[in-house]
Length: 566
Image (cartoon, rainbow, N blue to C red; front, side, top):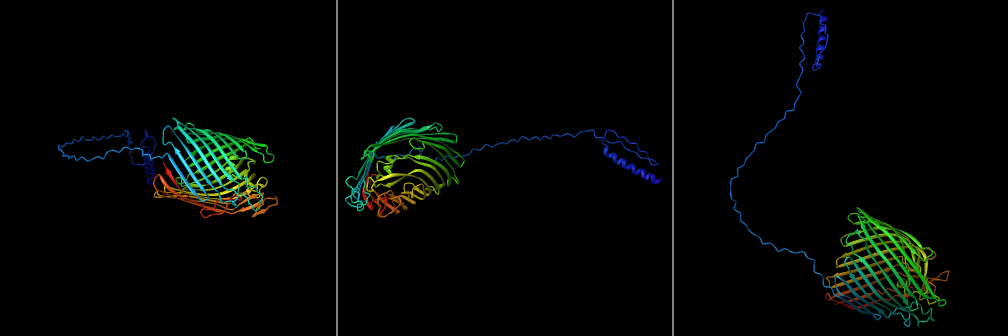
């Protein structure tokens, strides 16, 4: 019986403890049966009737009052002097002399006169005149009886009128050049006529230009005009050239739009050497080259297209891509770049004689097609005074112009033109130093590899070329100028027998032209800002070489002169 009561009490206690978990319920319903003599009493569950509330506590900040005790401070004033105010003004312009003359005289009876005069500074416009003369008795022919003198004369009048947002420029120029055809061997050509070796070129040209100066870059700025040239020689060769061209430029946001448009007409008449009849070669060349340039951060891109129309050629229409991309590294310290381009290079009788004045006037004139040029490299600045450029390129030419010694109408002293395809690989390095007015130096070196079309060699094209130009100003009293020009080995083609030439199967001769180094030194002493004396040594090491076979250049030549500003 006791055991039964114990089990009953245990069950009852478990039930009572379990009901404690439900003490918060609204009702309690349970049936319990107790067997025994012990009486148990259960209390009613106490339910919480209140909900929690947030008690706001407000702290009042007491008001603090301060009482100031009046105390008079004794202050002593000590004024200081103030320096007078300085008004920022533009620096005073240096005195501008209206005229400058440079004159000298050298070996081989070589006088020099270079004159410049202008009307000074003006807000309305400016004009000026230039005159240049250089002549020499020669002294380079293989025999003294062969005339070899030359002379150059040039007169130029120019003017510029300033308008509100434009400027009008005009110029008139006259050039007169005289040469002699002394380039032949009198021992191999003992019967050559030396009484008619003189050639004279006269050139008259003028141009008129209109230039805009809009400060707002979003407006279109332009530079355009018209040029006219009349060029003639002693052999009744006459060339007239008219050129109309303009350059446009405008900026929209980060993009710059620019382009070139030009139309050139060239007419050349001459006397045929075969039958003495009049011959004519004319050409029309049109160019349209729109381009867009943009910059995104350090990246700059220029993209465009060149459209050329060479009306008289076998293939008149030419299209060339014009593109270049570059990226600036370390604030322009290094700028790698890559690009592609092409163009038509115009050849005229005037441009040909500027390059080689010993050509026949009855020659074939073709424009050179620079079909494709791929280039890339890196340029930059090594310091605030030094910049550099390393460049690699390959160029494909169509109708590249060569010069070949003629044997029909001269004893080898005159040249005719020959055209062929040519591919040129070029490795170039340049360094430029500009240290204010004290030092200017530029060094450039080129290495060339060639691949010809039908011709055996790239005539007169060098394998290497190095140019050094230096000017040093010592205390603005002594100015030294050093120029060095070098070219590697070249090959020439001649239809005339040459004692140093190699006879080819086609009857022509291949002549090896040695490389050379032409060193020129100039020293100028400035007695004052207006007066100076100078001496010039040309080819100071007396290098013996030929620019055109077999034309020898002057060896050592010295010239003494003075300069004066007025």
